Image (cartoon, rainbow, N blue to C red; front, side, top):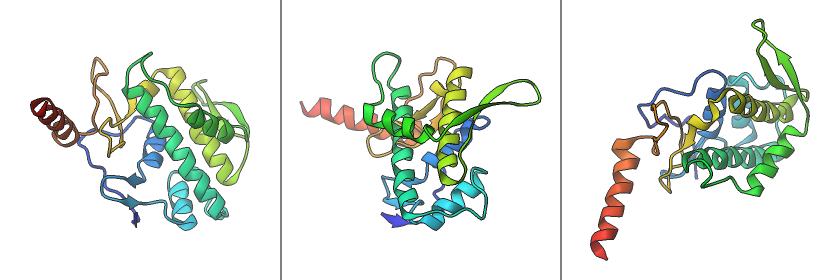
Amino acid sequence: MEPVDAIPYPGERPPAPGRLRLVQRFVNTVDYEHGREMLHSPDRLKALLVALGLLPAGARVTAADLRHAHEVREALRALALANNRGRGRSRAGGDALGVLERAAAGGLVVRFDERGTSILEPAATGVRGAFAALVGIVHTASADGTWPRLKACSRDVCGWLFYDRSRNRSARWCQMAVCGNRTKTRAYRARRAS
């Protein structure tokens, strides 16, 4: 994978609302189709987590944290891909769920904002707390109904997270003009060949 400092958003869709956007930005740090990796060093992980407001600027980030970040990122992608496969038909695997449960094991606490809305926030600090915060955001989004709309593109070489704003929640690709068209063209050619 080629190291990069940022990966441009490939789609025309608006980003996820509220704090769910942080999960979307964290997961969309790798471009498998073009071989680009944003989280290629502990320093890049630190820069991202600081930019997302999940880590203080003076925090220490290690190579082990970077490996864990990749695991958490792919576990979140697996959950978002399950959102794209429809209710009851697909679930995230046990490995992905285990990674996220371990990330949350650092402790999440319930906090209330000025409107009385509750959210889960990390009790831990540092990188461990940042990963717990991401899991807490997913939990809160599950409770408020926004989580099922955050989906991973179903094109096999993509996996980019997008927020499905369609009325019937039927969007499958980050971009219909690219991923959707390529998937449909490949399926058409496979049918014609057989």
